[in-house]
Length: 103
Image (cartoon, helix red, strand yellow):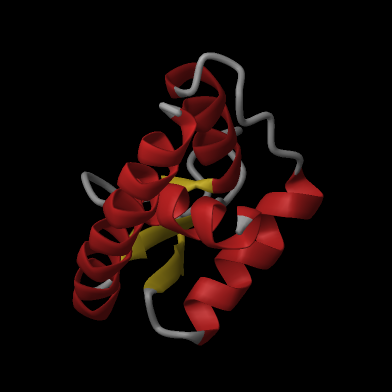
C-alpha cells in the first residue's frame, strides 16, 4: 500500500511543474507536515519505475555557472491519466477506511 501511495504523491507533486529529486523530497516533507520524510534511496527507485512505466519523463538541465546539471522529472500525459485513476481508487479506499474507523 505504501508503494502505491508514494507513487501517487510523486505524480501529484509533478502535476503542476517539473521538479528534481531533492525538490520533490522537500516539497513532500513540507506539504505532508513531516509525515513523509523520504530519503534518496526511497525516492529515486520510485522515479525510475515511473519513468520505465512512461508515467514521468526525465530530462537533464544544463550546467549554469556553479550550478550542477540536475535531472528534472515531469509527468507525461499517460501519467496524468494514471494519476486520475489512482486518485479515484484512493478516494474509495479512504472512504471505506473512514467508514470502518467510525465504529
